[in-house]
Image 1 (cartoon, rainbow, N blue to C red):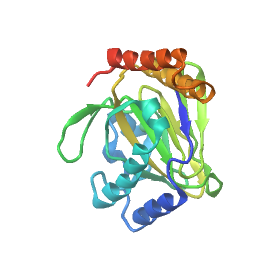
Image 2: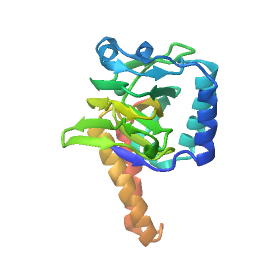
Image 3: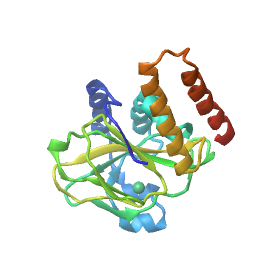
Length: 227
Ligand code: NI
């Protein structure tokens, strides 16, 4: 399941993050890639765990906290601090799958990456190329969203970033360990939650069918969630 979440960041937040990144040095992006991915990867990153990454990352984590769509789609247990990357002309990231296990930068605690997220920080009209292409069982999805928008997709997906031919593409990316490891089960929870939200616009919350569906959602989550 690939979910587009529009307007996660306000224009002001995008501007503040870009100002923090502009004032900092970028390093070779291969520092956070696994062995296979490192050979496919050609981009720049703000150093993992640096004060700039933490400051800009906190703006994103606060925005996630107020975003019901991200919480419904990812059912987050742990979120790794956001990282930041940049693709200038000619830069690219060939097909790869993200590493399964990640370590938190400060305490070394390990977590499983179930959900991958990209937050766009450059308006699409400012660069050519740079589309994120995600493969799933239904084919290829090509993604290029406005600055401040986010795409959430299973970390099990093969994906790539097409080479940049004009401008520079800046983005944040991070991984989430979900309370529900299995993408198919997580998708069912998201679909159910989305349907309940729609039904509640039409029927009062005291309607027995609304109570039953809401109870079913919580009891499924209780049955499937792992902490
Ligand atoms: Ni990746």
